[in-house]
Image (cartoon, rainbow, N blue to C red; front, side):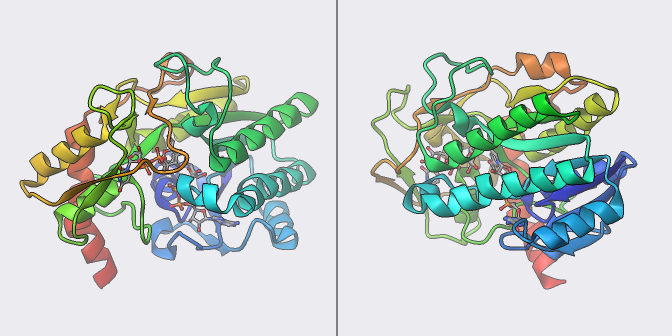
Length: 329
Ligand SMILES: NC(=O)c1ccc[n+]([C@@H]2O[C@H](COP(=O)([O-])OP(=O)(O)OC[C@H]3O[C@@H](n4cnc5c(N)ncnc54)[C@H](O)[C@@H]3O)[C@@H](O)[C@H]2O)c1
Ligand SMILES: O=c1ccn([C@@H]2O[C@H](COP(=O)(O)OP(=O)(O)O[C@H]3O[C@H](CO)[C@@H](O)[C@H](O)[C@H]3O)[C@@H](O)[C@H]2O)c(=O)[nH]1
């Protein structure tokens, strides 16, 4: 298929571009490089542009006649969205509207959307299934919930078929060491802890120790970025084969606490680092773990790296060797 990948120069998008290309798809990346990197797209053509640039977006879509669009481009940091909600609604909701409008005009028939577990807020039932009420507790989650809704309504009103993938917490890196998360000033737990382990930070702060969880720290379901990238290839195959629109949780169904993650990073790296205990961070739910049964039934997908030490090991190797090698090129 001919596919356009918005946000393909970012962390998850770039891993997915590699898998799409390996599966034989022709990929064009559309990215403004606000948090992504041109090197991350590999040999795929890169259109450097913003989703708000309707003329460039329309021209790119009309020139290439894409069979599908995979939409990763967004702002992604929960606490940032609490401080600056309009920036999040503009880039995540309004720009998704712009993209959907351009796709409708260009006759794009298949769409894969990067949604998030943050649409659930603080779910009452754990693990959380796709049928749970959507009740985001931060603007980031709300901005994605609205995008999902637009996609659903457009799907009902047109020939567009889509898969909304609700990612849980994404971590890890390409095991070959070519790709990984290069985000500047990252706030993601596993990346921050790995940076502390390799001496790039003077330690880590645990945000909140008074949650109703076994050790009082937040619990998350971490999915390896490579497994998630393969899920996109399978979502595309599902649409190509005529499959109906789906909303699917992408997680492993196993939660780890913040303290368990920090222990894993210490164990895998063999290094100790300072751990400080701070207040809760705005917008954080206590526990979020996926019921992934719908995903396992809908797609030809099985996790390969559903082991915390494997995820951490690959993330550490990227911090220690992959990223410095990349930056030295
Ligand atoms: N990282 C996670 O744990 C996680 C979890 C759930 C959902 N998601 C979603 O996955 C997607 C990718 O996240 P990521 O972690 O790879 O983030 P990222 O910041 O590495 O990637 C986002 C990419 O989008 C590009 N971009 C942003 N705004 C743009 C715009 N207006 N026009 C063009 N390009 C733009 C950035 O330059 C970047 O390359 C996002 O939609 C995010 O909400 C991420
Ligand atoms: O230095 C740190 C960083 C994080 N945390 C905690 O670790 C947990 C996970 O935080 P983080 O890695 O920032 O992820 P989330 O806030 O859960 O959000 C991620 O996961 C969501 C899906 O669950 C995605 O939608 C978001 O884009 C992505 O950033 C939270 O309890 C944080 O408070 C710390 O205690 N210290």
